[in-house]
Length: 143
Image 1 (cartoon, rainbow, N blue to C red):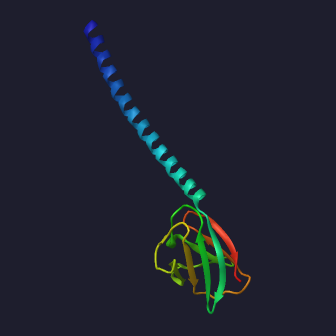
Image 2 (cartoon, one colour):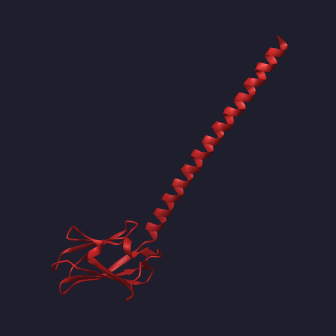
Image 3 (cartoon, rainbow, N blue to C red):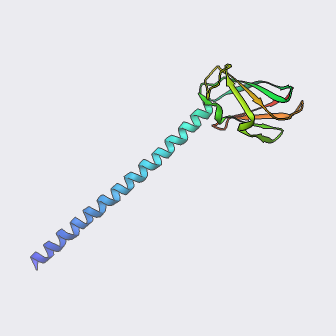
């Protein structure tokens, strides 16, 4: 009876260690995944907090609407991430010509000016909303 009890105790002990190892690995993976998600959210919040821009003006330029914007924050933005709504209507990207400091570029760095030419019909006093890729927005009025 002594040998069988010792052998069964050894088998149960090894099984508990194997099960505990799997449980610890699963908990470690879960904690790392949660930490990664929290880090991503913190980075998004920090980017949004550091993003600032101003709408210098929104003017009618013949058949187009011209928007002049200045990046006054400390975040580098992408031009393709900028969306425009005029009077509540989304303006498609293919109807927009964009230039940063007079050059074609997808990078809109701090203290640079972005000019958007929207090939749409607009009228004076219509409301314009500009939204960046990280969801910071500003309103303006067509003059």
